[in-house]
Length: 331
Image 1 (cartoon, rainbow, N blue to C red):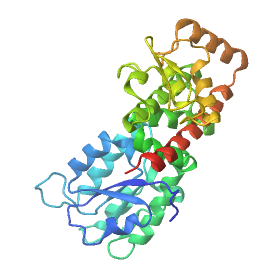
Image 2 (cartoon, one colour; image 1 turned 180 degrees about the vertical axis):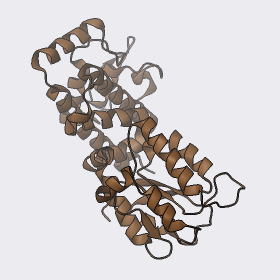
Image 3 (cartoon, one colour; image 1 turned 120 degrees about the vertical axis):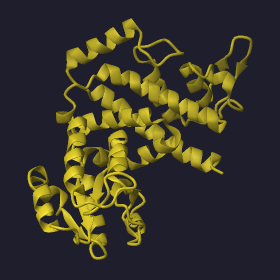
C-alpha cells in the first residue's frame, strides 16, 4: 500500500463483536471501518457525517434499535432509509451486504434489495453480497475500487499531500473549500454554479488558516499576526518572508536580514494571492471595489483559469508548509 493512498471511511452495521477481524483486515487496504451495532444508530451517523464516508456495509440479520433482537426485516428497512439519505445528499454511496446468509428467506431478501439502482450500479460498485469468514479481502478490494471512483476521493487522491497537511493544520471548512475548487477544475460539469469571485476570497481565507497554524506552532508571533478574530494577512506574510514589519511604535522581523521562513518563491505566491484586487490587510473579504474588479475580469474572459492557477500555487504552499512544520516543529 502506497503512503499516497486515500483513507476510506466505511460504516459497518452489525450487532456482533468483530470476531472476523474485519477492521484489522480493512486497515491493510487503507480502509477505516466504523461499526454501529444497530441501524438506528448507524442511520444517525450516516446522515450526520455523510461526507466522511465512502461506503456502507450491512449485516443480513441485524437489529433496528439498540436492545432489539435481530430481524430479517432489517435489510428492507435499512436499504430503504439509506436510499432516502442518499436522495437528501444528492449522491449515492456504494453499499454491500456482509452476512453468513443464514437469515430466513435471505436469498429472496437479497434479490429484492438488489433491484433498481443497486443492480444498475453493479458494474461500478461490484457485487452486493459477500460471505462472512470467506470474502473479507475481496470486499475490501471492491470497496476501495468503488470508493476511488467517487469524484471527491479522486481529487483527494490526486492532491493527497495537500489534504494530508490540511487534515493536520486546517479546519474542515478550509479543506472543503480547497476540495470544491479542485473539483471545479477537474470536474467542471458538476460545478455549474461555481462562483470564482467567491472562491478567490476563500483562497485568502485558506491563507488565514495557514497563518493561524504558523502562529500555533510558534513561527509567527502574536503581535505580528494580530487579533485572533482578524488576522493581519499583510504583516503575517511580510514576517514569514523575512521582511520588516511596522507595528507602529517599532519594527520587527524574523531573525536577521536575509533570513526567512517562506522561501522567495513561496513568499511571492502568498503575496500575489493577497494583493490582487484588495488593499485591506486585515480581512479576507473583498471590498466592493475589489469584488467589482474581479467580477469584471471573469466576465470579460469567461474563464476560471486565474483562480485555478492561484489554487494550484496555493497547493504548493500548503505542501511546503506541511514539510517545513514536520521537519522543524514536530515533536
